[in-house]
Length: 339
Image (cartoon, rainbow, N blue to C red; front, side):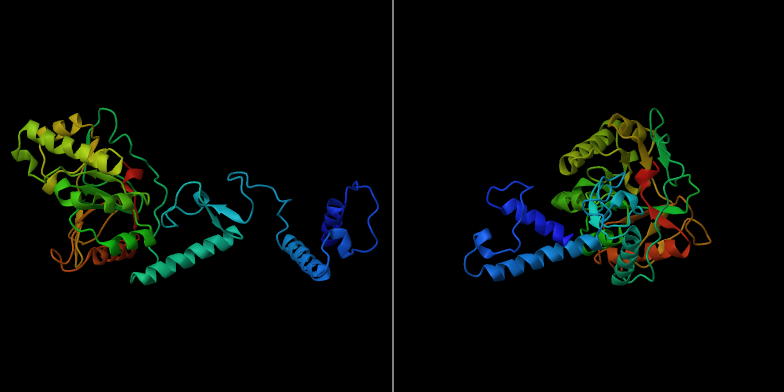
């Protein structure tokens, strides 16, 4: 291959000769217009050509290999869409990552997961959720305005939801990114407004939707229909302006609601109400059963809070949730995949 490349170089750089013309018996610097020092330059060029030839033998697919039937890329790249869901922090559809072989890529991703788990004090890599076996779009769709405290699924998954927005811990955002943990935020304006950018940044990682938790966090059943509607609709506008996405789910403060609340939420364009079945803190989990266990479909409530309100940090809280879920064979899944 090196000889072929050299022959081609000679033919193309000759002075007006056609490709069928005879080539000189020896390569002399004067034919290349190099003058003095041409010999040294020729040695360097020859070395470069040999390097290209060696590389071509090591990667035979270059120039001759067929493109991947799905991605259109060649074998030294692998599409993130083909890798396990949530395997790569901040993954985006269609992006490519270098990988000599798919098996090597999987090993690299596993090594990354182990490294990140150790970084955040976990005994193992968090379990990855399966593809939702029974999507429940019909629960919150059409005329069916649902209220859920637990997702009706047999998948071994639970769902993390985080309320209010007062604490904006950069380490928590880093942990979520490193471990690719999905969760849903229910934000109230009075607690979040000073830095909606923090939540938008997390939202853009993927599988972190931002939903409605009212503007001022009132006890909704104590308000008239119009005041309840104002609380909900105003926060719809606030969140759309701040994040570019209009929420579809609502969580009433304290979990308190009445039929007036549901009517008001519907008029603001929301599709359903999400409550919870367990609550997480840095130092404990309040379980839904006397057996102190989580089960498939449990929705876990927690809050954007810090040491000023808790005995620990949001990192401590997330670590506790991940350990509890893993101990019971459960993965944290994206609520949006089910409702």
